[in-house]
Amino acid sequence: LFALAEKTKIIRMPLGKANVANKIKAAKDHIFKQKGKQATEEEIAEYTDLDPKIIEKLNKQTVNTVSLDDFTYSNKQDEVKLENFIADPTTDDPKTLYYRDRVKKRIEDSLKKLAPREARIIKQYFGLEGEKSKNFSQIGDELGLSRERVRQIQKKALQKIYEDTYKEYEKDIDYLIRDNL
Image (cartoon, rainbow, N blue to C red; front, side, top):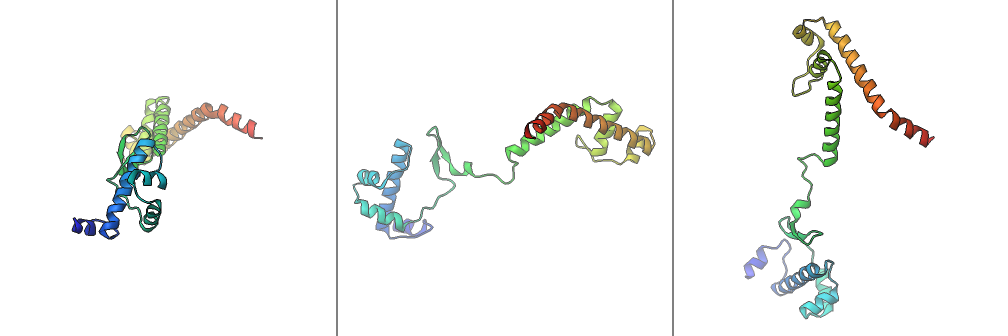
């Protein structure tokens, strides 16, 4: 037991103090679970039958360390591991995912309004749908068109997309400009 107390803590303390600290921590956890708020020193003293001055002194001497495997309580009083509250740097945040999906949907909607050849040129030129982007010459060779004709079609298609997008947001833009002047 002594070896565990000495070796398992990040900050070592005498075994007697460790026992009292564990008793205080258990009281804090119990009171928090019962009342849904942090325990006061008086509540801890009442629960543990310890002198409040001892509790205050020990609280000043100890540093709380937390393991990501420890449990905490959610708003619904369910036990949840702390690691669930840590952001995962390998995943995109919800806002980025929302805007990515929104832009993707907007592009898909715009492409549906184009002629099939225009949509194909835009998809190939910008490398949409998992394809590698191609230049005007490569697209022209596939479609049997000159490089210049592919460029013209692409320019016309982008203009259609721009006009369509502007029309969709024109009322919002006008509203914002009118109300902020």
